[in-house]
Image (cartoon, rainbow, N blue to C red; front, top):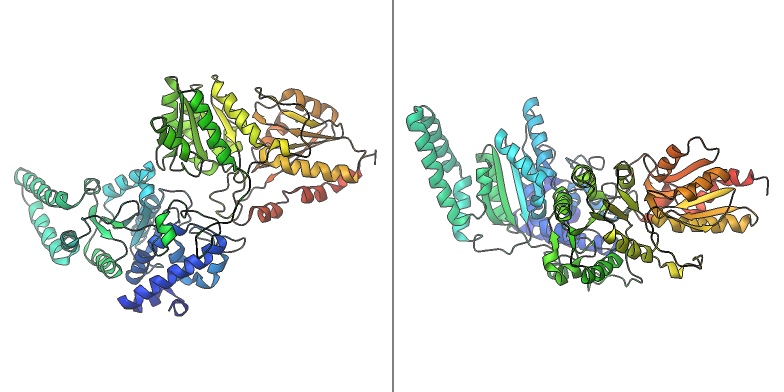
Length: 630
């Protein structure tokens, strides 16, 4: 059946039995592709049924559907003319893992960070109303997105404006409770029925003609009666108080009933409507249902067993997690904060062992940072574990609530740099640019697992202000395993970097993960030009950086190559250019150009922007050949 559905309007022509078959085939397609490409499996499997119901009732080119984050959208992509290309999901040049307005006219809004759908949908609603454009607007968000303040800001404004807007909550954290039963189905039918709303509107219109003396008590009494009835069945009356008509909870896998509710809302209700669906994350894939956390976002896996490929070596997140456990055992002032990323950031074991000193604030990064400020101001040592791309949402709090007060908050920024298949919204390539401008903020970019451990220990004792530890996705190399390792031991000192090789013609600095590229480049240059004087530097501290080391570089070298997985605008190289602009030594930056980098394998993305030892070596050929010593 899926092979015959080439356009979303064909979904409207199917009966309920055929829609059920279609749902099963869509799930098979999702599993088939994600088992090879990886992706956000569990959420998309759970959303399949209500997405089919949406396409049965609404026209996505007329009735814009705005998704939150996009973890739920694989079924939508498959059924909106992208099934033939779905094999390219999350691959370079292929289909994005998130809604993207440049990919398809069916994607109403590009998203990647949570809690944005209601704001965007409300904007589209107002825009259509002002221009007289026909059609509904539907915002679809997951329950986790409601922990973000932006969602509630939008709900508040939407309730105030009273424009026609449908908000669908995909609640996949709770089981199908007794609320999703015969009584509540009856209440949902009543509240969306034409007859009920006609009578209600007629009573409302006639009440408006009365004087305030009689009108206000009648309206108040009627609302309280309806609210009392709803409170018997509905646990989320807050949405009614915000100005929405609340419908639910509803079984998000009952396609016939979903279609009936969606159609009733479309035809009979005006103003903002909140539809609460309850779904099973990972539905249709047993091991995803049993381990939804693992299958929220996963690499390729076995179709039959759900097992992923064995990996070797510890990830940066694992190194962080093990070290903070060790530190917390010795220091009871250490607390940990995350924004719905306990597992991803390596805090799962910590959350179990030190439950009273662990705080998962949900998808609320701004709150996480100011919470940390409050903890720090009274003497605790908060470690805020967060992905680089999500910390962007809390810049004001970093600047005003933490740095301005010189509070010793430790930001452990995971996924810094290119992250791969999640693409433009998730690459952590802007943090150095927006963090370097914050006065008093210390930034450390470890290149090895041991350096992260040392930096965490040093930061836990540093009391002069906030510290940022920046490290990438993937596996942390061991310094002791490096073929170029220094013979002496190294301990962390504020603003002190490492010079691995001395030289006076060309210097190479590699920031954090990029130090491995710097080593690769050094080896290539040295192999071809063994007599060339090359300096190799692991900066470690980005702010404040090692002035002693770089004063020497800019006084004796002709060229300084700076390699970093950050935007070239505002990155480490940019800072050095500013500070040493009068030097005869020329800084040559290698980083992320002024673009939004696409999705794909990290190695391929680095090749696209010439961020590898081999490609940098090719680009600096003229510089090397110009050396009079050769």
